Image (tube, rainbow, N blue to C red; front, side, top):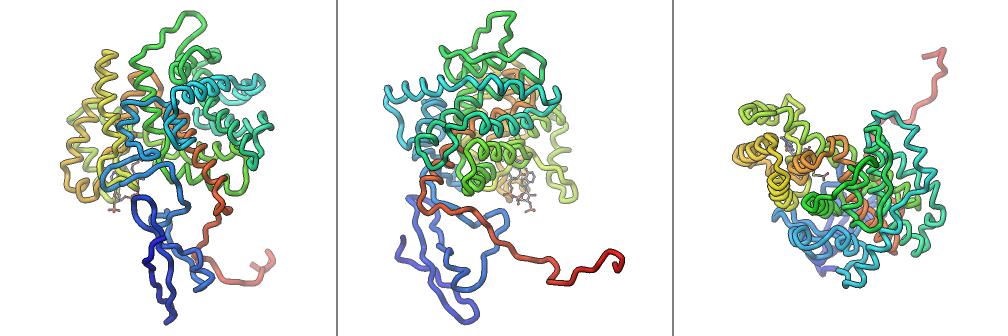
Length: 428
Ligand code: CMC
């Protein structure tokens, strides 16, 4: 708590509100007593100026383009760490020792199978169902299968539910893909790494041996790291809000998946690649730039702009380099990558994008890589959900353990009719 106070005068009455300090980043004004003191609420649609919690997981400086998990820069984690290690870090607060990492990886590996009865769920979906629709349903249904890990007041049950969610998500995601292409489900293999196992469950068929390409594993692992957590974004806030009522963890993560699906959030990677394909060639870029700038056209450059980053998204930097490496190593010559690079250059030099501080975000290049690896666009957001599960779970655990936690209940500015009497239908 800072010694400084914020002073608010309402109707001639003056009150002081405490100013709180984080370890780094903007201070916040503690307005919890505002309604009791003044009978007024604050008004902040989209929570652009509102901190809903304190958190020790992830720090973003949007002006400087900085993203830290538990203090470690995302670039260092993406280049030097692994998704399993980052998962441990997010859940436990510190990097693991070799033994701790080994134990954690073994625990997650042992939870990768799903209840066999759950496989029949998939058959209830149409083959052309969007895999995110399947993810919402199947992940929500986990709470009907794992009753022994739904007591949120028991830390051990919370721990097991967290491990189950992180471990089963690749299996569920791969099965959603297999179902859509009409191929048999592939069971997990415990001798493979988390990411290699996921790729095998997605791309192998029983008819032949599947060699997991280490270049692809490396790129996929980086993509998972880059999507692991991003502080209080829309889906994470959804998970926290759902969890604040005491809902079980599987239901909360299903809520997060539903929120992530939207094109302004996790759905942007699918939308960005579709946009690049629609543009198709470099000569058509100016037409799309003009549309993005036209106030009367709802079109936006997908993969550009961010609520928090008013600078280059540090995840996009790693993503661009990874896209280049993967395309080179896989020998894929996709003109979409040239369109993406050129579009980025043109937008970065255009006064509209400069003035509004619109830079490429994590989704701008991820689709290029995922497409080169062989994923259909519908799967892109599923991969985001898979990776973000660790962040959701870590944030949910942090919230449940926080003594200041209360059920989330925003207020409103009411603009509907005032009280009036009911009129029977024959008198209207
Ligand atoms: N193309 C063209 N103009 C844009 C874009 C864009 N991609 N993004 C923002 N603007 C303009 C917007 O029209 C507005 O202009 P004005 O002030 O004249 O009305 C101004 O920039 C501010 O935009 P905003 O919508 O008020 O900003 P926001 O913070 O509410 O929205 C955003 C952030 C990410 C939803 C938005 O930039 C967007 O829709 N981007 C495209 C979708 C996208 O790539 N989303 C992925 C985000 S990163 C992954 C994730 O976190 O899920």
